[in-house]
Image 1 (tube, rainbow, N blue to C red):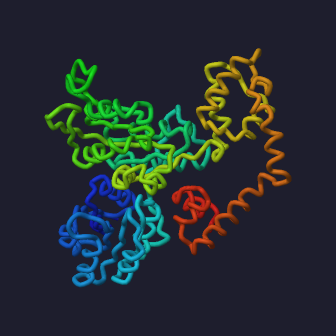
Image 2 (cartoon, rainbow, N blue to C red):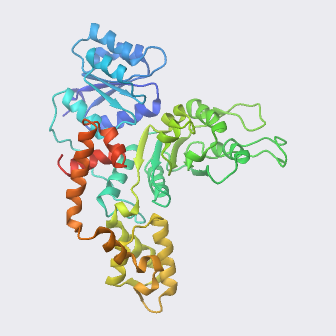
Length: 438
């Protein structure tokens, strides 16, 4: 199919990162893309589009207002609305005014493509996409869950969209961030990390934005901040959920404008960075409890990647353990492997690395025996048997399917609310629905 034969999709969003993300996904799915940054340009481009993907909340003319005008001038144009601020009244109003669908941000790209395909009558087609590149040698992703994580990371990496990586402490969020940077157009520039939870509030502002000489006691010389150091590259905001509320407006300002001032400075500086943030907190809950700014959350959360805990991807446990033993030239016995697989790993990959380092020291020969493991692991198998009783591992899929169906029934099919009941992300729920053929 030539470029002229491909349907054109108008993407309307005031956020350039969101536009780039959707453009990349739609082009990979075989569509041409028309980019529009506001309602006026959307109306001007409507005649050239086969379908429009339209943000609801924009400065100036809102998406709802654009939809009303489109239905007057282009009544047959399919429109899919996107919003980060779900409002039932807006949704009902939009559907009554002819919107094809109404999807929640952060956008699930598979769900969006499916909605676009349905809107254009292309459901069930097979799209030829580039083969996923091989993972770097140091990355272990034997489990289907982690392969999906890196598939998502590979999709978003070439864009400049902000990414929020969620997951428990020690689950490997840093590896995902590094992968995104290495596959981005900024790979030749710096990846600069800031641990937002490790520094006191009095120092984190200087760490991020730098300071001028004499700005505070001890500031004996001027210093560049991380935003300056990362110029042209990627800024990794680790544990962003711990950032003080007082600093969040300044962070939001630089994300929106690319401009900031050093602490104690008057000169306005400019930076060009791609921001990737990570957190082990539930930021949606933090927003509800007024512990994190809603506007900053949605600015960081253009694209979400949820890294599963190690206990949720057990196929990775033994390959990771063997990788951590590479330098020690030791191997695991079958009994040791069973204990590693039976343990729930509350400390995730970080805990596994430490356990393997300890076991290599404790082992007197070339094999890691059960006795070389910490006491908690030595009793893991018997504890698991007590907890599970007579439930067989093979029954787990049946149990999970039943739980998903019950959650969807309780929420009248609302995937977001069902995911909350199940304690998983909405994206993870969609994957499970696909895997189980639901």
